[in-house]
Image 1: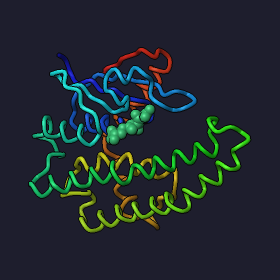
Image 2 (image 1 turned 120 degrees about the vertical axis):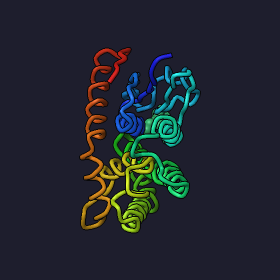
Image 3 (image 1 turned 120 degrees about the horizontal axis):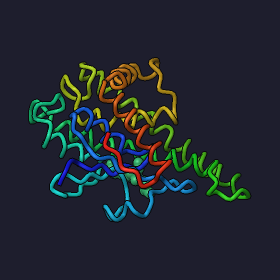
Image 4 (image 1 turned 135 degrees about the vertical axis):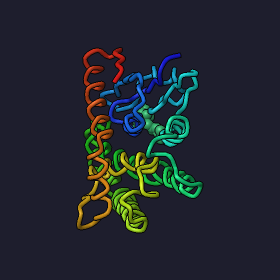
Length: 240
Ligand SMILES: N[C@@H](CCC(=O)N[C@@H](CS)C(=O)NCC(=O)O)C(=O)O
């Protein structure tokens, strides 16, 4: 078995794992899957890798298949991160990192998924033209009554966590799996609400710090390159 294989769906949470692999400076094989242009769902081939057909999924050098971005993050940090900044410094840190990683995927990300679905309901080609006015009302009701205020609540929570910790990072005084997991949530939040320094000063400072990291920049570049190569030749595999 060779290096780690990352099964990457375009524009997905797999971005977290690309960032992490770059932070850990681990070589990997990128296998890119294109979304269905109408439904945005993953292609059936991904179900051959993991029954849920979702991304990210990795295969490690032993052939073990691992899904769930939080679990993949924990696995890669514990297996390859002994000398990296990402390693939890104490057992308390390890606990808090796991807590926040669960929050990122279990509580915050679903709100953004709901906002994405309601945006599709309003404008997407999957909604028949003649029921769009009704679909829009339902989408507005869900957004205004639940998802939009909840996203703001989540962001205030994150801002408070950063203020309380006081180091610029979510846990301890270094980047951790929690920052990796939140990078996708916060990046996504900009699509749905104003994330400004006036409203969320600590998040905005943290976001600048994340975006300035060489690993984050390298991940963006690698994703861009791999996704565009795969659009031209769907079966492409690249090592980036
Ligand atoms: N909880 C999983 C979520 C995985 C997931 O839902 N991935 C989305 C992309 S962001 C996906 O594969 N969607 C395609 C589909 O469901 O068809 C994780 O953290 O990895």
